[in-house]
View 1 (cartoon, helix red, strand yellow):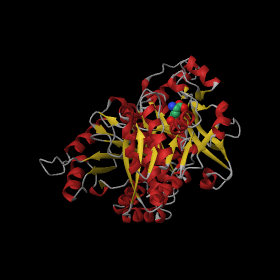
View 2 (tube, rainbow, N blue to C red; view 1 turned 90 degrees about the vertical axis):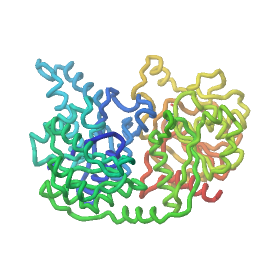
View 3 (cartoon, helix red, strand yellow; view 1 turned 120 degrees about the horizontal axis):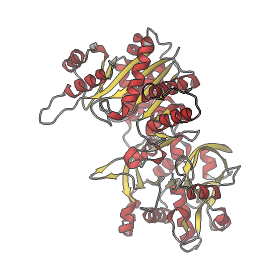
View 4 (tube, rainbow, N blue to C red; view 1 turned 180 degrees about the vertical axis):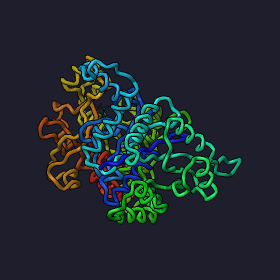
Amino acid sequence: MTRYIFVAGGVMSGVGKGVATASLGKILQSKGFKVSCVKIDPYINVDAGTMNPLEHGEIFVTDDGTESDQDLGNYERFLERSFSRVNYMTTGRVYESVIHRERNLEYKGKCVEVVPHIPEEVISRIQEAGRIDKADFVLTEIGGTVGEYQNMLFLEAARMMQVQNPEQVFFVLVSYLPIPPNIGEQKTKPTQTAVRTLNAAGIQPDMIIARSELPADKPRKQKISQFCNIVPEYVISAPDVTFIYEIPVNFEKERVGDKILQKFGLKGRKQDMRAWRALVRRVRSLKKTVQIGIVGKYFEVGDFILMDSYLSVIEAVKHASWAQRRKPDITWLSAEKYERNPQAVRELKSFDGVIVPGGFGNRGMEGKIKAIEFCRKQKVPFLGLCLGLQLAVVEFARNVAGIKNATSAEFGGKGPAVIDVMAEQKALLKEKKYGGTMRLGAYRCRLKKGTKAFAAYGKREVSERHRHRYEFNNEYREKLEQKGMVFSGMNPKSDLVEIGELPSHPFFLGTQFHPELKSRPLEPHPLFLEFVKAAISRK
Ligand code: GLN
């Protein structure tokens, strides 16, 4: 029998619902249960692929090419397994399938209504995830905050599931206890209001995870218990942590796993979080740092710097650095600054390593090229991810191979397109078919012996995840090879370039795929590992 745990958020967004969900999953997994996760994104967008990362955060891509929310990345990293299309849904996707079914007369002449047909579709998708993953538990995270109009139908689905099988459903509210500086005390009222809102939707939480800057003390827990109609042991203190992988360990201090199992009348089969705990201990003890600069453009929002757009890149840097017993010190570098003031790239010299991550469109492009040129000439370890590889190719073509005004077709310039668009992509663009049509998901990559890429992976063939429309133009392969660029990874089927590197440089490597998506805390990605090693040796 599969059990269903719903996780909703109260008070405000950004308090770590995704990480809390992943942590609950981790704990249940460590107790010997098979766990699946589902993320619900209450947007009309059919998938996350058409959302601006500055608004929605990183677009996480699964092996099967689903363009999903960054929380799927959290689930994969915590549970150390991969997920697929069944683990992600948006409002748009749900409506799309209901409408599709209606057109096929599958409702047999019935009036198709928002309730119950939309929640029913949601339920069937959650159940499908449980079936496909053969899960003992499906944890479903409902995006947004309770009280928002747009997640009402998902709460309704959760309520319907609970009514149908009360003993199979458990409800968690991840809430927030602010500590206003002028008051100096943790306040529970917003959480009480959130619970009332949830009650109005017919749901009583079984557990409240009280996120806050500081631990929730006994009086606070009692207050929440009393006003939110919940036993005090099921109010869980969840103070801020320095790094997210501590959270399952902290939850276990409050015996969260056993408390959930108790509600279901279950007992843990084993307890195995040893490797995870060891990682947490190791990270806590790290003193030495490695300085990594990331040249991007998706982080300035008004007066604030947000890092969500590059979440997997940051995590991958952390995993690799920790394995090398270093704390990464990451600095955000604005590509546009280098356009306004090309001299500013000199600051890159003070970094141990520089990353140019993925991106789209013209903005900041020339600045990134300037940064890459500097890293190549000054022998600063460089890792290019997707767009990072494409721009490394453009830079090399222009400045080493003498291909004047070399560019990428994406930027619409007149110069030779060393990065070009394939015929099938051209047809899609002409018809404005943008959603879900890039080269997405896992593709094979064959590695060339004797290269840095081969040495890093230690095998002939790997599989990596993609999300891009443009590709290396093979017409220029010979010319660039003659000038010293080595194409160390190729797609064996389509002959498309997957990895480019410069053997004459301590570490200069770019990938057409996104290696960051497959890095896990206990299993850092080999290319990130080599990059960090090179960065440390430069130091
Ligand atoms: N904009 C580039 C492309 O579409 C790179 C995409 C990316 O970096 N993910 O090919």
